[in-house]
Image 1 (cartoon, rainbow, N blue to C red):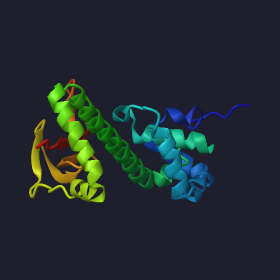
Image 2: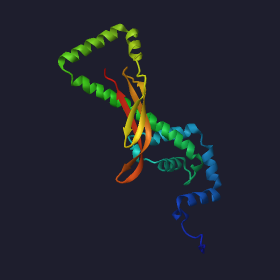
Image 3: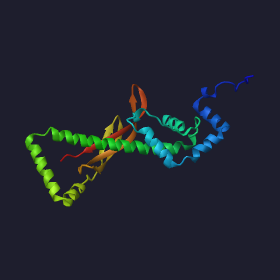
Image 4: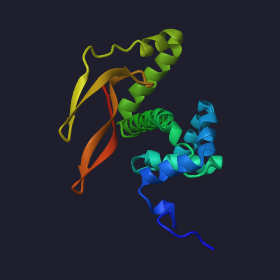
Length: 203
């Protein structure tokens, strides 16, 4: 005969915090399993979960933990004890992906600029490229030795002030870079957003 009384029913209909507290109380072994997963394993799983063109702006840490729990075969809440670790590893992986995307955008922009150049400009660039190749190591050193701006650049976004730090890019050019999480208002609601600022100095 099914149990009756105030505790009967589906506990998962309770608020999230209450459900997780019950889960920890009645299934402590699941929490212990979460503590046994080393950071290297978590980092690899997080990298897999965030790769593949996923929209990072719409992917919450709660969704990420649920996906990791499913991959590890844990019950719901099995990784609650690793919330902070997962958050740190996830933000580091997101930053790595965003930096890779930024480098790709810069490379594409340079290719587009080269394709749109006049024949005379293309000829000058080709000669400059040949000279750099002939210069060998000294040419590469000059590219790596680009002079960085002395002061950061201040950027204002939706009332938020960002400081973009001086930075040298893979192209050999200098500029400014910043990556921060800010609060923005979308359709009347406040939401967190990852903002990437990259400014490459062309001259």
